[in-house]
Every structure is written in C-alpha cells, then in structure tokens.
Length: 352
Image (cartoon, rainbow, N blue to C red; front, side, top):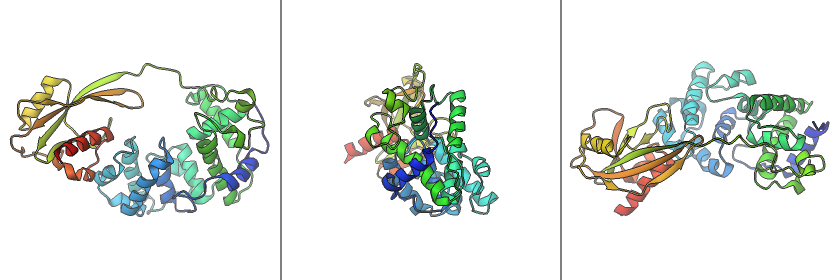
C-alpha cells in the first residue's frame, strides 16, 4: 500500500485555502450544533440538510429544548429528510444528554459513541470539531478518499476492509495537538470527499494528492473503492387508503420501529379487498377510486404503492390517539413520509 508521510500536512494546507468554511454548522465549538449537523448529514447531501438544520435550531435552540419536545414535533420537522430512525435516535440522544450528562455532551469519543444514534465516526467528528480531540473519522466520503489515494482493495463495507481502513485512517492523523490543526484535518477529509473526490466524476486535476493517488495514476477512479456486491433488490407491494372527509384525510401513526417508524401515514392493507374492509370499518363508502400507482425505493427494497381514494359518509369518531383526521392544508403539522406527502399534496391541489 502507498505510504504518504505528509498526508495530513498536505490535506490541512489544501483545506485552509480550498476547503469549505461557511457552512451553517462551521465556525462553532457548540457540540449541540455540531452533533445535529453530523446526524443530519449522514447519507444526506449538504444542500438538502441546510434548511432542515435551520428549522431545527429555530424550534430547538439547544439540547434541553429538543429533549423536552414531544417526539411527534421532532418527527414532523424531520419529515422528508429520510432515514427516520435518525430522528428517533436524535430525540433519544437529546434526552440522554439532558438527563444523564446535565445538558452537556461528553468530551470523549468513547462516551459520545455510547449515546443513541452516534457511532464511532460521528463521535470522532463531534469530539474533533467541538473539543479539538485527536480522533479519526471514517464515513463514506473518507472511505472513498482513502481507497483511491492509497489503493485500498475490496468493498469498504466488508468488515475486514473497513478494519484496515480504520487502521490506515488512525495512522494518518496529524501529530500536533493543536485544535485548529485537528479540526482543519477532519474538515479537510470531509471536504475532499464531498467536493473533489466525488463518486461519479472526481476532479483529480485540483486534488492535492493527484501525483501520488493510486486511482489517478493508474486510471482506476471508477474501480476504487470497489462497489457493493450486487444483490437482487426485492419488491414489496401495499395498498394505501386515502380516506377523505371534506378537506381532511385520515392518518394513522405507524409503529415506532420499521419503515417510517413513528411517522403519520395512510392506512394500509395487503390487497384490494382488505383495504375495502379497512375503509368500511372507518366509516368510508363502499366504492374506492383508483389513484395512480407509484414506487418508492428504500435502501434494501422497493415498495410498489397502490393508492385508493375513499369518501367518509361522516367522519368516524376516533377511538385512540393513533389515528387523526388531518386537514390537508396543515399536513406540515404532522410527520408524513415524503411519498405520502406528495400524494396528499396532489390531492389537495385537485381540491383547489
């Protein structure tokens, strides 16, 4: 494997001139803001995160405010950002910090990693940016940089390869204990992977490691890192009921675990007849109108959705707090999955 004794020095020098310096969560040592951004940025692009980050800070300015808020409020603000277990863990983590740590995030990587939703890499990022800790990160962007620059073979998600990358990443940390240097190094890793060493078309000409990068020198940018071994993506199918009463629609709260856990969604059934029975039990008419089917893709499977529109003869009195008649004009008040939100937005548009 390639050896670069000046890797950290080159990266720090590049980051200070060419890196990102004006993102909303930069230029702060506030562990709460750093943690919030790191969780939101997991598997999500910066441009998508920025407006969500701003709304969260406006509603929950500190960890105690987030911990004290109802989880429904958190889920509603998170709706559309995806990977909803992050939002549930966000609320659990805030509660743990508020109740077990006096409202202050721990300073050590090990303690941070024990909190809900914070793994080894995220803990290192928080400790580095908030406290200047000498700790390495290893997210998807960093894995791509290391695989290309040092010629690391194998799929980074494989445990053996990932362990080797952790060892490599730790060996590259700068020796200096100065907070600014550690922070610049960590930010540089993120910036290089997000702006130059991107998945599709890396900008090798502007990269500080171009003369030494194994992928660049050997023309293997498309091969490194190795792709995930291909697996057949299964397809599931569900029927969704859009039960309408005037300008309101019936929503059900989903179980806390599983897809869209804890969000408000539409009643579902395994087939057309079962959905008709659900509609009838909720006071709907016997006839259901077919709406355009669509497919939503998750990480590990595809979901074919067959929506049906029903009318309520009279809004059924709801027996519990897991169902609600929600005004179509105020869907923002509920945490609704993105595909369901699009369906309801289209329905509201047809009523205007």
